[in-house]
Length: 288
Image 1 (cartoon, helix red, strand yellow):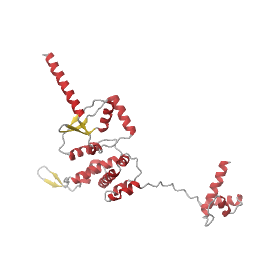
Image 2: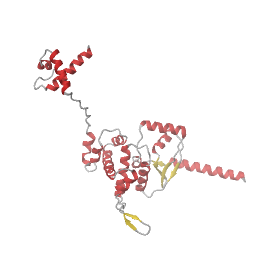
Image 3: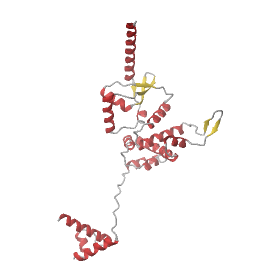
Image 4: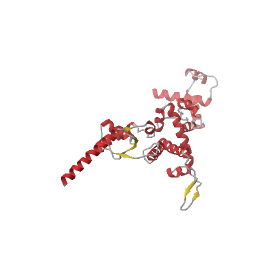
């Protein structure tokens, strides 16, 4: 009897392994879903790869079975590492009603993670807000025990409470998500850089594209000007000391001194003159 049981168990295990292998061979990656997954920085991907090689896959990949295919919903980075090293991995199948439901699940799942950059959090919150608004989800009614009662909370207020931010932040997130998707159509790689915090484009510029998408070329091509730190103006006492030292030690007239430096001698600013003279004197002392 025990021998028969062992034979049945072995057959069942072999059948499961064959089935699992068949599923792994039919995994499909859809770009619109992959783009929802925040891209890891190179050092983060290396760390993930190292962890998988040492400890294996802890969390199963999420697959959506459609016909003979299995759409990868969660675990894109883990999947790439497993394919690279030809590793088996656990998976879990979840049925979704349609693409929109799968997309919503992915956004909520990603927002539950802790390793998101501020830009990624803002983008995903904005996507969720925009999705719920476009789907026409009612936020003005809630179910009571025996009836429906008025709920004055808006979608932005509901999401703000869930993510511990202000409703205004949620609305700005929505504009950021729309603007970033406009940029993605022109430059997908720039979108990735922005989400990883590697772009100097200001968030307000991106948000403005939500209402003015035609300005995308201007925003993309605009090179942020690096602001020079403001120099502290010397005090009146400091300038007086510099001026007095000039009188005692410098025989050249101001225009002659400026001319030697290759500067314009018309309309010399007194404050600038003494500051330049002091800097030149200190430079000579350093060289000596």
